[in-house]
Image 1: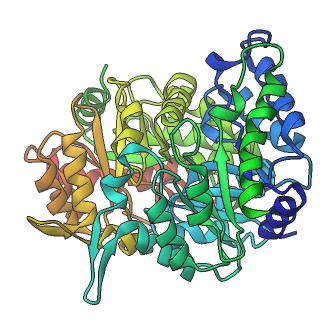
Image 2: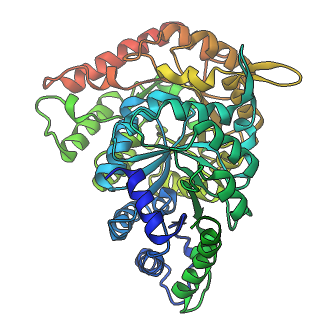
Image 3: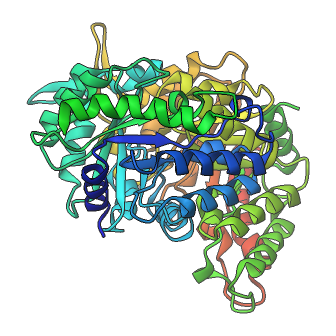
Length: 274
Length: 274
């Protein structure tokens, strides 16, 4: 099944556009969890068990696994395979290289790790994104306007053309639309810029998912992000929350508290969109 | 020892600014080499043995190892440790993420894989590069103007300011100069754009290494790249060659032929710079 269909099916079934970021931080693990790779695995499986009926996707960030070396990459593969088959997994890896190297990153993400989608960096242009897009059933989610403080440094710079002048991230959004030959592209735009989210949705139209980080620990507004990021059917704005959903309690009720924290966001989504 | 000193020492000792890209492609391996991960390891060790006295650095591209899954990451670590200690290893990984995730990529590259330097993507701005820079003895080599055909799509776009207007890659070069608090930054600029290389060198001054891919299989000119990319002392233009040096022969003389191919480039460097 195509990534976008899998995503839509799950969002409708679970009445949720919440994506939980599976980003293990050893310093934030609950007290009862061993502070090692085995503990991390146990913790993440508990979080998945506690939230799988209220999410539309999971998003493990590769960096949080690579920090543990080879054992971490092994855990990443295990965690992706632990996620129930019907829930799409977005590998947040921000990859991108010249064509033959991007092709190998695609092999790693899709054939070895079995992710349903990957995030990619657009700086090197189309020929670095294309090898990912050629996996037509997989999602390719291009960084557009990120949620970090220094995103404006390049992304919000004004690009001047003969015809018009606008910000780099808008040019990226326009390109993303033009690269969507197989209907499998998406983009990343942070909750920290709701007005820009709305402009991006206008550029890309109704068919492209937007992955929206920045709600929660980074301070973005949930309702504004959903309103500005959704398409005209109130769909395809994927709200990612990592730290605030994962580390809701240090006590033995951590999985339950994690579910409660996620469900608070989902309830607010449901009152707006479902 | 700081990355830049290690690089300079080796370049002067070996009279060479050649960096060999250790990018294993199973379809191009010599006939006698097994077409599996063990064969890849044997092949790469032979190439290192045959070239270690004529290079200034090696550059394994992470994608070429990740394509083999976890065994590939394990091989990457082995190959980095196989390189003689006095030769710097640049991990070509093109990473970059929000601060806490970049910090973890730095842990992976520097603490686990033991690379001396890493390539990073600037699209997300300074706070995504900074965690790498904080490893003050390690090199952080920022993508500026890449050698692939679609690099112009964003990198050569004109950025307009109140005061001036110039291409995005020049803004990146200017930022790289301003980010160099610890003297450990570098940038990537392709041999396929020699005039732009010269402009970049003018922006960044004499102290920052430029990693120059694109000579060889991609068609960039060696002499022009050295002239335009070197500083005023004829230094710090690292010429990377991967495919044309690695796969010089399919026969049992492959390591010898690889050395011969590399040495032809080095001889041309020596007649210009040493």
